[in-house]
Amino acid sequence: MKILIIEDEFIIRKALRHLLEHLELEGVFIHEIMEAEDGVDAENLLQQEKFDIVFTDINMPEMDGLSLLEKSAKYNPAAQWVILSGYDSFKFAQRAILYGAKDYLLKPITKEKLSDTMLRLAENIKKEQNDFIDIKEIEWMLVELESSIWVLDENIVMETILKWTEKMEKKQLKLSYYQNVMNHLLKTLVDRINQKGSISLDAPLCFSGENMNQITREFQDICIDMINKTRSQRKGKIIDPIEAAKDYMLKNVCAKINLDDVAQKLGLNSSYFSQLFKRETGQTFVEYRINLRMETAKKLLERSDLRIIDISSEIGYDDAPHFAKTFKKYTGISPKEYRQSLGIDV
Image (cartoon, rainbow, N blue to C red):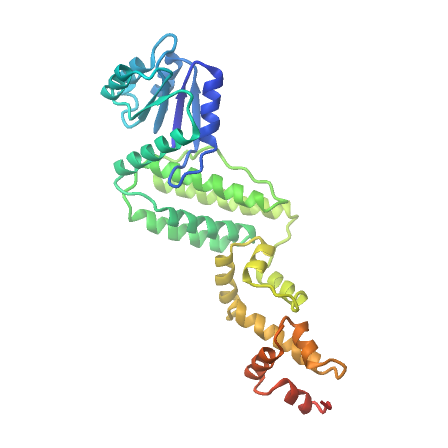
């Protein structure tokens, strides 16, 4: 969402901006905050820009907040207005609501009060939409794109955006709402990739597309550009996540590593990595790990100087009987019988 803060006191204006920028509320996606220090500057902005939420002080030079609200309704009819005041006045609050304000906040503004207000306003905005995008759909998109961009998989990026487009075409979304969601999605995606380290990406402040299809195509182009930048910053080195995973598992066959450990090592989401591993190898992670351990055990059993209990521990099994049971299930014979088949005295 796009927010305008109208406040003549610099410290209060910047404090409110800071609070808004650091809110972490489900369903509240802020992609741009603009400021005005008086009613005249604010009126000019309201004529040029479309805002979802406007915070305005009551007492300001040139034009007070209530007059601005009344006068500017025609410019931003869908905007949700919040009046800021240092006076606990029923008369002021009554006038504010009469003019269409959605809330009336007393200074100093606390994070708790602001959070409550933003949640209510976000719910109001959502109700005005013919439809909305569920937070789970957004997280799915983020997980898929974050992982596929990180491993430079352009095909998965294109497939993911195509699936997203098919879902969005079934909804009746306002353009401003879709812009808000896509801006949030892009900012979060860039932040997550940058947090993986060694890569530094940036994102445009907002999309310029005039309809949903244009915005989606713009988003797709940015994602492909992110792959190219990531590849360039790695000096062209492409990460094969499956080969990297296999190599890591082989080097740590005796450690008690699980799927989450390997996914984290590769910088991938666990769910994405699990699906990718099964798709590329035809085996689940657990199946592959067992096979790797059993093949390693077979090689170690060829050494007569190693006890079976030591081999069990060497490949990550604390319980020797459990190792023997798993080995027999995998090979059809026990570790002892396997050694005998090699002519090794036991």
